[in-house]
Length: 148
Image 1 (tube, helix red, strand yellow):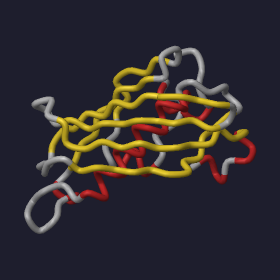
Image 2 (cartoon, rainbow, N blue to C red):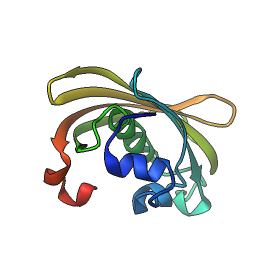
Image 3 (cartoon, rainbow, N blue to C red):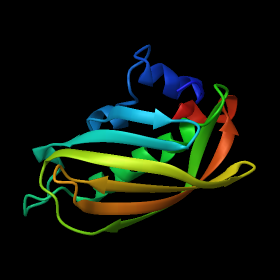
Image 4 (cartoon, rainbow, N blue to C red):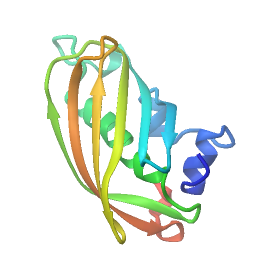
């Protein structure tokens, strides 16, 4: 991975910690391909993410989808750029128990500073558990509010 926003690359290469939200989700970057605009991540869903039935709460799955779609775009950006999510639509396909989950994200299409993204989450048995589509805007890093 030779491109991407400075903050993203620094976290991927261990020069900086993951953002607090990504760390809370137990995010681990497995692979990123700037040329293809794809990324593969792992997350650790803990017991503290569960609802009264013992399933991971949809809001945590949505956060994982968000942290999958955005970095797919980040991996393609110049060091002085960041992304700001404009919209995220999530679909929850099956309940999931705590454990290791996997996210795959990709840039579907980009026109100027607007990008259309997709993300999917699977469980350890490779069953699809949730999907999302997102729209994001590419912004100069100096305009990113705390690069969050």
